[in-house]
Structures are given as structure tokens and as C-alpha cells.
Length: 595
Image (cartoon, rainbow, N blue to C red):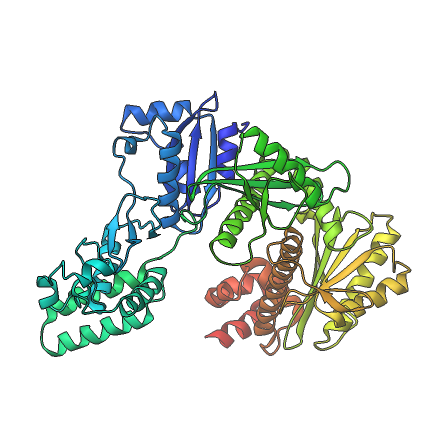
């Protein structure tokens, strides 16, 4: 059954937190939602009958799905809020409630006040957040108030008015919650030192404050004030589990375009994040097919111009992974630390996820294109002269030197061809000698292929390090195949890949598709070899149990197993039944040995 475009998109979605957007046939946004697991959440719209007619209508209209991957659920919640406010999708009921997320404000004034707010006003004040829960805001403010003495009044505490005794201390002073700056009882320097400490707490550096809370909780518990101690414990739990900063909204990053690029042999993927007033309002990834050997810098330069024109971006500041030549009036920033760097990393992450999604989609829609890309990638990664369309992998199996065997598995176009798998009993080696066993098996395999005129592989993978690789090379030398077939060894510990004559191994990226194919080959060879080894050992154990009976030879054992299939059934057989198979005298010996 052919896949629909939606089916393909659903199969390629990542299982990460993020925000999804549904579009109709006219590319008009229908709905924005958040998810802890994008794949499961989006698939749920299409694989169940919905109770509400509105949801059924929405699903029928969906013709395209886009998504933005973010680090946490909290980030997804904030990004969803930003996108809903920006695009006002028809099916988002949250539009009726224009509530924004809360911030903590340190007011731009003499003896600054600290308070929660949902309004972000550009008056020079400092804003921290936004927070996904007002409970977190109140917990932080309660923490601050319990440690520091701050004013809560909204008086204008100018030096002239304080000197003129315009104000009198209030009840907060008498309760010990304020040190009375309104009457000049607290210096501005001392007050600002408190504000500096509080600023660190709000930014996330509150180890000292947590220590203070824990001491307070223990003190209350010792005084048998368990309810109050539990309230303090709840505050500690919220603070320890809360993520104080988010890369999704940062008021210090205003009206910026962010671009990153990831690429492979044939394609490049450029991600664009648009930030307005510190919030992400758009994410778009462009796929570029390489024509010649264009560099990433050249492709990024073209993409930046194209994407800014397409979305009519007026931003004067651009974040990039490195400097490229653009219009003179644009300010280019290459972030190294902090929130700007996190935004750049988020963009790169989305480019990588888009690339993986495309691979998954191509694998479903166009398997040949997927195979061609994979083979080209392996050729590059392993520095091969030809694409490894035909790969063979060898593994030895023996336990304490008994029943040494070997396995050869065959992959064509990156997939197992099980009918071509081969088992080998080691014939010329006695004892547990992996190197000699590898030499024997490789020689036997390619001597036979050469004599029978069969096609040889483009790549041989040896399960083992430099020792096993050297042994396999001896056989290729003896057969005159050295240089005609590429050969590598893979060591288990750090997945090092060894090449002939090169003492320094190659370390592929752990997420590399080339490494995954080699690991699959190695694991398949190991599985195939171990299963053969187990069968051989179990058969030997059965044979030896029957052959151990004095007066019973190998031929008699074969006759018994041919009829009864197992030693257990031989034991259960009656004397008469055994006599029918092997005669009276042998039947009596066998029967008496088991009874």
C-alpha cells in the first residue's frame, strides 16, 4: 500500500520534546501544540476516533506537519505560547485567554523593589523568566523575602525626600521585614549588595539559599513544627526541580535571525530561527542539493540571503556559526557562550533533526536513493576506492578452546543477505587460537569464491583488532587478493576501526550511519557464529552422553537419535522399544545404564 505524505511525516517524527504545527492545503496554519514526545503526540491525532467533531474536522484538513525540537517540556510550553500569539491559529482555544507567562521584575529605581508581573515594560528594569508556573515565582520570592529585608512600598526614595523626613517606617519595619531605607536607616550601598545577591538567586545560583532553607526545615522539625517544615520542604523541592532559564524566551535577545548549517556528501540543511522581542516566532529548514563541491560557508551565504528575502526579514543582527560575507549594514555575531550560544545550538539541533527526518522519509518513499546515499557515505567515511555494495564480515567462536567455529555474514546494499551466510568448522587449528582460525577461514572463503568465479566483496570486516586483521591479510596475500579487496578490523572496546598498515585507528562518530552498518555486521556475525557454536556443543554433549555407555558405539548412537530425536526420549523408552531399534543385547545395556 503506498504511503501518503502525512504517513511519511508521521513515521519520521522524532521522539523528543517540541512544538508541532498543522497546515492546510493552502499552507495556512491550523493548530499549534506542544508535546513531550512529538512522534506519539502527533500520531495520536491520526490513529484514533475523536470524540469531538471539531477535532475530526481539524484532522481532515491537515495536509502538512512541521515541528521544532526543543530541549525540555518547559521550553515547548513557552514556545507554543509564542507561536499561538504570533499566528493566532484557528483551532487554538487558548487564544481566548491572552494571559502571558509571569516574570520576576527588579524595578529600575533607587532601592529597587522586586515583584512578579505579567507585563514586560521597557523602562530599564530587569526581567527574569518567563516562568511556566506562578507557584515557582512565589516560591522564589518567598525564598528571597525570607533571606533578605526588602521594601514593599512604592515611595520615591530620592535622597532629597529621605533627607526631608518625608516618609515614616511602616509595619514591615517593625516586623523585621524591612530595614527602613525610607528614613535613611539602611544605606543604598547595603541595599544594592542584597539586590546583587538576589540577582544571582534568580539567575539560578541559589546553593547558599537552599542551604539556608534546609537548616530552617531541620530547625522547625526539631521544634516539632512539622507542618511548617513540610511547607519549607515543598519550596526546596520546587527550587531543586525547576529550570530557571530557558533558551526559548530571553528579553536580552531582541529581533535577531539565527542560521546554522549541517551537510553531507549530497545535501546541506540550513535552519533559520527568527526571534522577535526575545521570543522564537518562526523556524524553517531549507534543503539544498549540492551541484559541485560547494563549501558549507558558500551554501550558508546563499541560504541566508534567500531565506531573509522569502520571509521579508528586517532584522539587523544575525547569529551564525562563523563569519560569512553579507550586506554591510548587518551585524554578524558568532556566539561563544551563554544564551546566544544556546539559541545557535537549538538551531543546529533542528537542522540535524530535519536531516534525520528526510533520511527516514527517503527510506520509505525512495529506498534506492537511500541506499545510494548510504553507500556513498560509507565510501567517504572509510576512505574506500569503491562503494561497498557487497560486504562480508567474519567472527570466531570458541569457549575454552572447545568446538572452534567461525561465521561469515554477507550484506548487499547495506542489508543482510541471509541465504549467503556461511558457517565454518575450524579444521587446521587446535586449541583457542583466534588469529590462526581467522587466517584459515578467510583463506577457505576466498579460495572457493575465486575457484568458482564468484564475485568478490568490495569490503571485508574482521571482528577484532590489529591481530585478527593481520591474520586475515596473510590469507589475502597468499591468494593474491591484497589491494583488490578493502579490509578493516573493528575492535569491540571503543569501536576503533583499523586499516592495514596504519597503527592509528579511525574513530567514527557514534551516530554515524557507516558505524551503525559495521556494528550491525559485527553483531550479526557474532549472533550467527554463537548459534552454530551452541548447536555444535549441545550435539556433542548428547553424543558423548550416549557414547559414554560401555559397549555402545557411534553408529548405535546415530540410530537411536534418528528415531528418538533426544537423549531424554531414549531414557524414557521401554526395553522392548529399544530392542526394536538396536537389538536385545544393546537395548539391555542402554536400558540398565539409565535405570
